[in-house]
Length: 302
Image 1: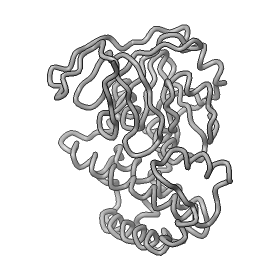
Image 2: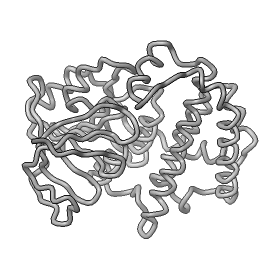
Image 3: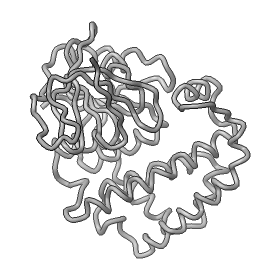
Image 4: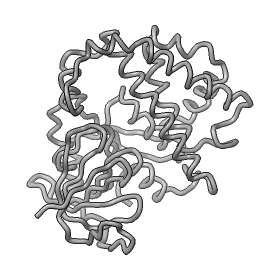
């Protein structure tokens, strides 16, 4: 099995979600630290332009978006599962709901001037349309209200202890945890969480999962690992594809909400939840880059 390599930076909430997946599954993994802002030349050589954090690398297969990363890690190590049987829709719905905290946290951090100027300038390029951080101040009260309302719902859910979908943690716990982890990183914003003891106790239970067995790796070494490897993904047609895509089709794929980081390549494999593009890079050779269907836009080329 290829080494598990995670390209991330320490304060990324979405990376924290995946680090906890590593801990839940007891995995050994290599940590490649990437810049918080562009340029990210080693990362984008692997992905073909995708720049969001984190990215998972398994040899010459590269996984973008935490949905796809979590599914790949589940395939590698099915137990303990991230997806309790019979709870698939609830699990996904809780992930989506919990991650709505993320933009609340971003607004509150912007209004406090926490982010460095280069970080703010970089993020302006990721969001469609005009972006004015000063406007964050005007919506701070609404975002505080939204955080409190969501935490109140979560408090009621967790009052009996345990985890969100039963006695064992699953992906929903890690997805709801990580934006609140971000909220708690700043003392002023952390006060919003303090009135909710069941949430705080659950946060401690999730944090106790840990990050698995981590060791550091230089990004140049990760590039060489990809170059020396052969993608494990084999061509497979999706007979149910509603758009009639087939292996060999040329596509451009990009995140739907934000990112402004399209990737072009040849479709290798797809199913109801994911698609994979083969691409070539002078530095890394042939790689297959994996994306989720949900939250992704894809366009035919040529």
